[in-house]
Image (cartoon, rainbow, N blue to C red; front, side, top):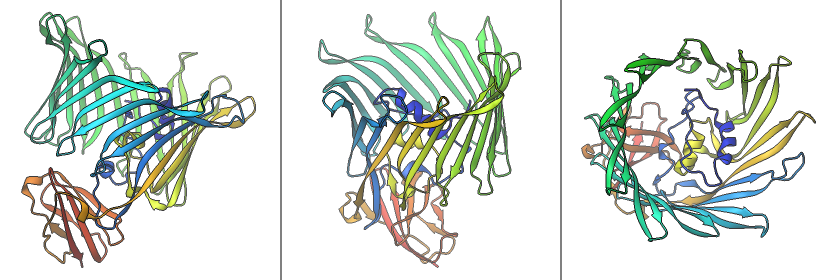
Length: 488
């Protein structure tokens, strides 16, 4: 459960394929100071006159030559197309062809959505110049918009049809928590689905996952595979203990212990192997603004087999508390000193707010909980050249936005709602009993997002808002609800 640094993870993003999708971080970077949820970054329908910035092109440049001073050249571009609700329906990746000095179609991801904006079909096409069908995923949801079936199919170009490959079934309890997943594979000989894998999840009364258990299908029966137990204190994960089934018994595999500071930041992680020996350790440090400024890790040295320093990351912020620089250093065990490795520099449009932007889901996952206040425009990755003691440009990630000014009068399925009390001092009541867990966005008169939350109790706190006029947008299952109130 080692945590991965946001910007340095971008380095690996480029190695996983020019059009790698579904980028996920091993952890959600909970050790970064939290900003508002990214859940509204896609599918937001703002109030009338709201100006926001939608990421329409994500580009990557690379140093093909690899030597000092070599210029960065285009590698690929991802061009996004959105529906009227600002959900991605097409992502076209173009690779830069050095011979023709032009961009060539490389991959396309096409999304079909239902009335609740859930993806019901994802089709991927790939090739070079001419794109052919590759695979597709089909999704089915229950009445609560929980995913219950995912079917993966491969395209047979010989027969020009889709062929079943894999199917996952998901089951939920009365709290809409996923408790069971069963994986099947397609048996072409019998033309039927065959069991393959099963995962079970158990939760405590606070919805924390406390047990994760996996099974393999063998000899027409489920066979134990792994068992992970999670322990919490005051809502914080304190320990994870992992077991593996072997010779009819659960065998201890490893343990992970975590500690936190008074602000709820995870400040240390210690991992143990099956002999209870320490194999990994991390320590995080925060400044007075509760922002991560350094983390240091210890690991097993591949060369010596000894436990010692491994990696040191330093985080720097601009005057607006944007994370704008990350320096990665590795431990040189031969000379007992830290040596530079990678350097990430983030540039921002300081005139625009990060909360005013809409990002595709894979970019949201890439950003994680990054402490960005303003709008990032590019990220430059440099590598340290020890032979010449200089930083060498290696990669650059470019974000190009389209400015959009929307009007609720042009949005279909919008409905005015009455908020009360109005004027309000502490809370506003939103009477939409059929829209539990709907996303609620509150905007000020300048169109800036000042509050985002889920509609759980039918009440939203406005106590901390300054006096003024505010607009409310509720994203329902099949309709957008809008309202207005005065904060006194």
